Image (cartoon, rainbow, N blue to C red; front, side, top):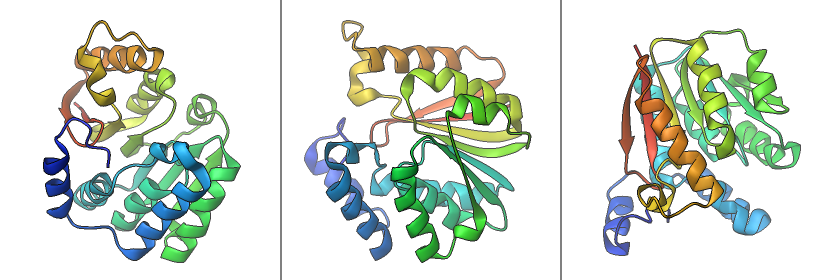
Length: 214
């Protein structure tokens, strides 16, 4: 349960009153926990998955991008929401994304997903398509770089979603100077000052920032 900013009772209530993941997503979550241990915390929460599927259905993107795929939960949720578009995933790990590829195939969405392995700052720089929807959930120190590369390629009215932008609430405490928190705080300050976009930080799970390009 990632809703660290909510009381346990409210967090449970939120999950109980949101569409639950289907058996395939539940199995992926269990496998991720088994093979990744503490790193399984990099996986999004069930309510985030439902949100990503819904927003993809509403946006109906032709080109969607994900930076940071891990074992594939978020990419599977996005791919399921596509209506004829394509999802381009960027990640550095063949090990973790091999799990994602299995689940894409089992879900029948592998024909709408393209995976590119390598440092995303380099692979995104070579990506030459106009982006409608993007989800960023990768190394936090590089969020500004991913943001600039994606916004430059995003159509007006496009949407970029950045995960973990509340950092368990630490971003609101100036005394908390752990490097990842500092990086997220700097990213949040960057986007709210960018005249090219409108921004809404949602207190969902560990924080999800919605950024629309003007």
